[in-house]
Length: 131
Image (tube, rainbow, N blue to C red; front, top):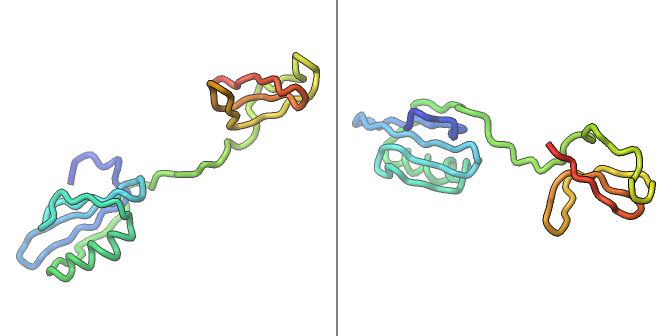
């Protein structure tokens, strides 16, 4: 196991009766798995927790390894595609082109740009929200 574990979500430490040890790390992305030590040192898998519980742990337990410890290291990455909560400050009072009300769109796409924008409800004039 590396000294840098920012990418690790959960670790399983396994020990064999002959004294050999190994670890299995589930990364914070939720699908990357890395084996350190043991017969498959350096093995990578992309099956996530399911691969660990259904494939790797049973395989190593059948080979004489026992789980010495299992613990959470870091929180998993959030893969939420939710829109930001609420509208940002700076809403125009009305469209400068036609005077119609404007609305906020969190993920507006145009020919060359994508992101937050204020859009006119009439002529669809757009003003991009800048960070």
